[in-house]
Image (cartoon, rainbow, N blue to C red; front, side, top):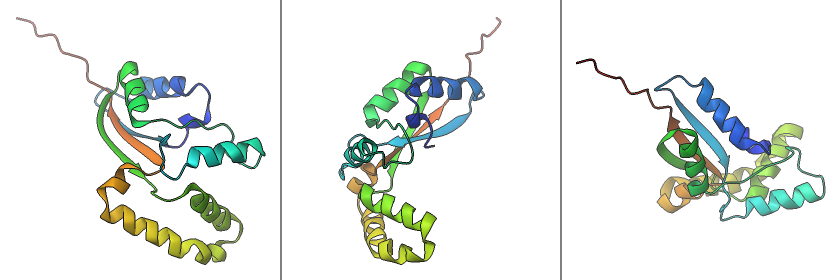
Length: 147
């Protein structure tokens, strides 16, 4: 969760996850949503341009793009979801306040609660959070039967 997108060789990170996962093992892979309705990838790009983004390189993915890459590696995709349906600037502000002045998160609490309410009540919002989550499984090898 929240790691592979921070390396330009994210595919190698996915391959390593596949390698170390035991057959039948499951994992949840979380990455930024390229089609976040609040344009978080654009916000991250702008912050990176001005060297204000603390998390370095970051790639966003579409659900289709991520699923395709994971299937190419050998994973079976068993589920999709998304998290954090809220504007990226709100999340970044909340994280900043949480780390620097925790008692000031009262400033962001009302807005976060509003977007959380929308997320709980709307199937559309549940599909369009700024973090995609894909559940995968490493298939078990086929057993050959001796006759």
